[in-house]
Image (cartoon, rainbow, N blue to C red; front, top):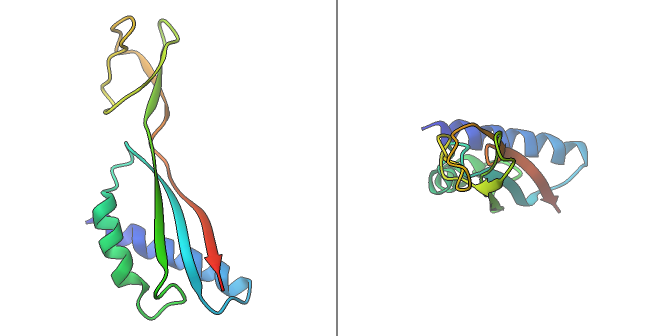
Length: 113
């Protein structure tokens, strides 16, 4: 389960930044997670709760913004939402696409006390 290592990295980064600012605790961590990132959000939430124990982030909340996947067709330049890496352009039916967004895994904000 790679969500456990992701949760550990998120907590490590957030705690280091909070300590730099002299914070006594973290109240919320906000993430952007792309639909095609391969991250299982339910698993990440579960892992987050256990990883937070004994850290500045204990009792904090995790806010996850799921970023939809979007692509652009290389043939007709049509932009559209996708569900997988092997998407078909709905306009010209080409498989030649550039993925524009949806692979993100970004620590967006850390709220501290």
